[in-house]
Image (tube, rainbow, N blue to C red; front, side, top):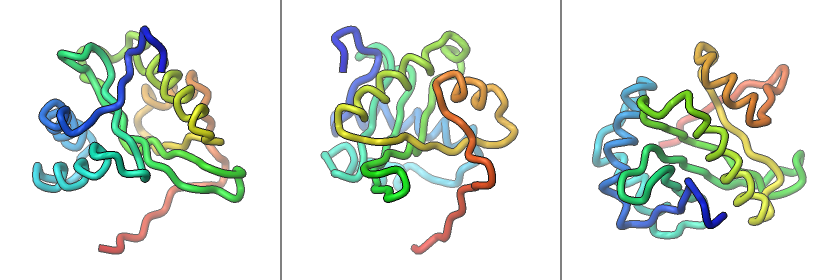
Length: 152
């Protein structure tokens, strides 16, 4: 990542900075989780799991957001792909262009890793986020929708 980065990879030492932001994001999105669940899900990614990475956005001392990026493989797209599982910026910094610069930095990082594509899901009623993602180069795939089957 660039020297003037606004994005940096998080490790175990950043757990206490991440948990309140993840809790806020889950509350904002109406997701059911608790602190123990969040910590269990975070730990492997912060410890270096090959399945994904967590990034902090903003100043080192006081980050203003986080991203969780998970990895998979796509025959359709021709190789390694990434899924932006969670992306949160504190409400006080939204609308300032930070989301676009953070996504650009993440995209460069992923391209250096050999990733072919970056996917995400967004609520249909979140017009502001949809516009931000479209400005960052994301497009909706006509006729496709994310479906999930919970296994555990």
